[in-house]
Image (tube, rainbow, N blue to C red; front, top):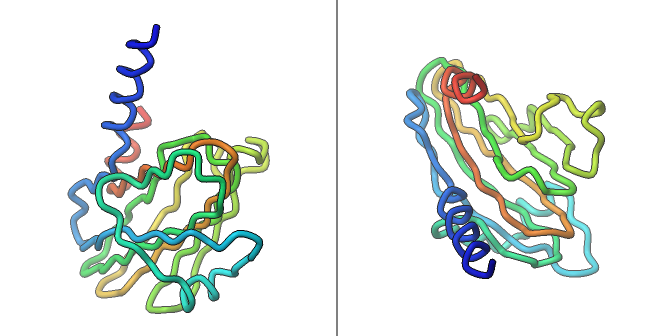
Length: 168
């Protein structure tokens, strides 16, 4: 039993590394994270201006760190297209996603495993945000995660077509 658990952990960890599919029209920069100080609550504006961001090497997996995690990723678009930002780990109690286009907040989603499926914008277990581009633009996606379980944030960027094909 012990060896089965170790094998499953290794397989899960290997599949959870942040993946960037070939997304035509996008240049996706490295992912960064920041741990919010205990006992303090930051807005997305506070996090963007005050955080000491750390570049993620490999996967964003902080195990059982019961603190609030912020992550950030810059994306440049250079042609029209639709893509999907997806977090494939379904056991994040609270997740706030913010999308900035040319430094202006254009979309936000407040979701998580602690929210009932019927109240979610998209009734799927994974967490997604669609991003439509019309040409040359700068995007930044910022996320805030708070969970009592494993602090694991496996991210996949893919085209809308690739995302739909994965659902089929």
